[in-house]
Image 1 (tube, rainbow, N blue to C red):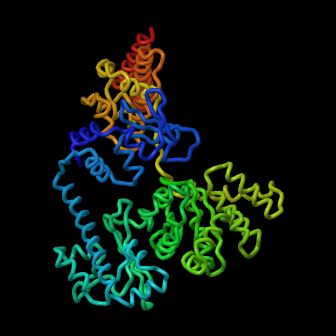
Image 2: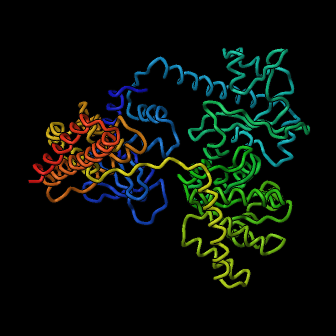
Image 3: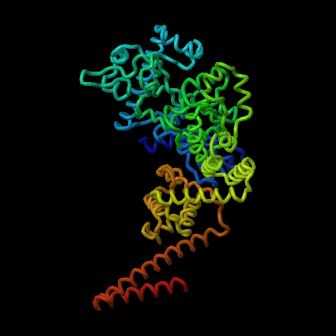
Length: 566
């Protein structure tokens, strides 16, 4: 972990307004700046950035933090990765522990190894007439092959292994990267006689490979295993090249495979991406929602493609994305359609994509079953107005009274709700007592009141875990807000940013005294309840000595309470 002094140095050199303005359009509103939250859908700005406190907070979704938190959430980075990026931006040289240095070193080795492997595959593509012929038949010209850094893994036992070993990488490290496999006979190349597709992260680093067989060997596609630099649930093929076009067009084209994406880019549709040999995940939805909210599913026109569309739509709708579908003729896919018909025909299809309801209504079979399937998908839509629009559209398409459609929708939604309740419940955050929340807010806004609070309260007086740990850290000497917030992550950091941006009351002195009084009073009530329980137990046991002592303690609490109220 970076040291506190490193983090403070980075914060002092970077301005949060400058950083967030690269991602969010901000307008000044008094002392703060406001914009539409990048982490959830909203029409009225509730995302607030404070230049004086160097924090942000969204009063709509509750997200909040500092420059590190923002980059972690927006760019889908780990905290150390965000610190490293901001340190370079600020010109701060980080002091790293041996453990952090080792982990960073391990990542650097993997990234360099993949970069070298990509160069190896590119060199061998130029030497293989068979591989070049395959790509030419698929309509990929030399320029496209170069732009996407396509390559070829030769049909040899250990050519890549030898190449990487000569570069200084150990065989075991090459195996862990998924570029070599170990058997009883030793190490050998994982990818052999395959056209190679490098997979990039958002920063443009090669983090994995997909290999496509040429001669019909199984599996047809072979992908790298997951490593510390590659998680296929969080990566979309082509996104590093597509992200600018996605922002410009306002939508993303989700396709099924590497060749679909490459062909789309080659024909000018540079907002195309694809998952990596896996179904769409919530992580994919969250990843793309950082850029746009409108999604067009461009899948194969066969039965498998239609099934994949339904599955993808359900996931993406749950992520809060708006989903439409491009309808292809039977047995066509984006790659074949573009190569046969060209960009204009594809653009014509894009201009009138199907809505969810139109997509389901085109399916063959019992319309009642299709309608129920459509309603199951509509139930995933988080926007109630959009839900109502889909229900009305389905009613019109089926020529059935909307009331009956709504009744069926409620049944489906109730079944889903029961299934959710039957599933293991997620831990819920305990509601924070209002007086404890108000106390922390006042201590953040008026640090001069901290000493007085510490003379009359201890952390044990606060019953909520979050407020208690914050109070404990304040008591331990973290009285500066920036120092305090840097020690927290997640929900606690968001809680602090919200409190620090709340408006000030009319009479903070009275509010402060009232908070102390209510906290003390609540503690007395709890003690009285505990004593009453112990008194009852002593009576049942016939322990009169203990009973007398407990009753005296109870009376003392009652008298003290009355004194405090006078």
